[in-house]
Length: 543
Image (cartoon, rainbow, N blue to C red):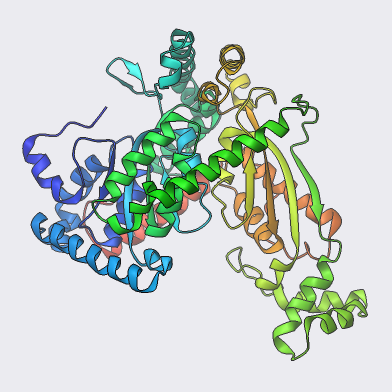
């Protein structure tokens, strides 16, 4: 599945990638701003990152690529890496400070990895910045070498389920591919273009709506692309965890990533497979195995499907937050401040809260850190496609259960309206049956066949500041309707127990919309027009 290039094209691209013939590689010799732009474009296209760089950056004169990058000599680059490795090895020996590894970083691209793999790699809370190909802007109906792009799980490939695995994956993709055009046609008929909307904005909105409607058919084993920027310390921890994962794909990807990162930041990842890395990996693996045995005695029936449940919160949240608001303005110990706040009347407390957050002009004006003094824990059940969107919030504590078909699935209402309900349900039932048979022997590997429409259970533990940020951001109009509903429900639960603290979420959108992306696309049109005025030329016309 490696993208093919001519020899001339390979020669042009070679200085910017650690290899030209593998799915996992490092991007190098590019300014940080170019890497960021490259990964941003990469998330919204079916092209490989090498193809994007060649066709949309290097070959377009208006991008000014040669002036930005200049000439690159591979021999000089290799020498520079060697010198840097010598320097950092010396620093680590002299000072033993692992934080030095946070001073060096790398961009790495992981192509043709499963959706399951991307979620595991994106679990890191800090130190890594991932960006994944979107199921909202890209259709996944393409074939390569006569087959759809899904992960060929090696354990299942040598088992009695080999044929069944291939068949169910192909069935899900076939159903998805058959629905692309009918769903787009239905959306055009139901939401005709108006005169105040450009062709570009309308087509982009219809495409996003169609993608949102049918993405639930995609299995978790769908192959996708992702880019990650991270520092050396974060990569080391990520690779150790990946090597401890029970899935073969994760362990193989960890080995490939270590090899490629070793070409640019070798000092930072060499401990992944040394005695210290192996000891850490064994600790993680054994912890998972031992605790899993205790859970085996619990009933696994799915009893209770409340989408969002507030399972824990701080009864003294208001006193703690108001005390934290006042803390930097006094010289008193916090214990004394809490005593004084507890003696205040409700009106006085509300005046303090209002002084702290009432001047928020938009959702980006987040409440200050005083709001981090109260925590809320939510147990959530939602489809895996929607979980993938909310999973990107990392400034909180989250843990998910393994994929299953036990919790049922969600279906976009537009499928029934378009007359496509039966095909969707048939595919879901077939996936459920296949999962049940495979999971009886290979529970971890069976997850690859679970479609994104099936629900998964997870929890979020977050402070009130993050509650404001997540709920206001994920309830915006252009958001997917599934996660918008969860964000709205989460804040409803907080408001029930702490109405005074929830009173300043002025940017929580509780409305419902049909074409969610339309207004956002109109804003993009205005930005394109502004850029066209600032940088005259033809390049903005086809964006």
